[in-house]
Length: 251
Ligand code: CA
Image (cartoon, rainbow, N blue to C red; front, side, top):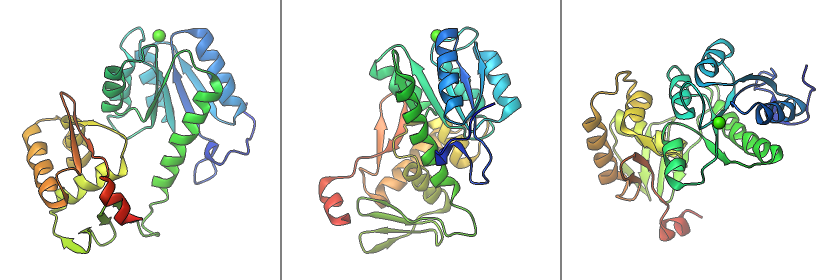
């Protein structure tokens, strides 16, 4: 069994050991990754193809999934889609190709980070710790503690009051607009497809109504600034960059 490690992120908020599922068809890589993660204090389970990876995730409900992009059965993008159908599970994707397209596509289906082969186990572990730290920060947002105020340039969202400010001005957002803006602010590095936004923000399972997303994005831009949401061509939407003047004001 795994060693207890000093790393805070190998245990959850309740102190339980964190579980990681590794889905990788190259057995030597899978074993090296599993070995390293176990030595870091994680509980690790390994699958070697897409379908058994998804089955393993359904059984174990892991805290994080490491998935190879190219897999037998179905690929890492499909694995990510399926394991995230019920709940958001952090995913770190392994990819043999360093193309930007793969990166965008991988992040668009919900991967939190990616590592390009060949990689060192140490590098992968560092990425995993970073992703889990972000999850821990999100987990701390319990009803007992007020959710943190989200700041992006001169835009401030206060989830406890469901209030938005642009500079000093209070801006009225509808409930959906607020949730959409909050979603982008809570996942600043991720580009989402319209379908994912419908699932995550609206709670729609079937992905219909993509024009709904477009109209709400337009409304959010009108109220919080045109740069607040960026369009990623042929993929979807993500949080926009902080303009330099706004960044200066915020500090
Ligand atoms: Ca592979």
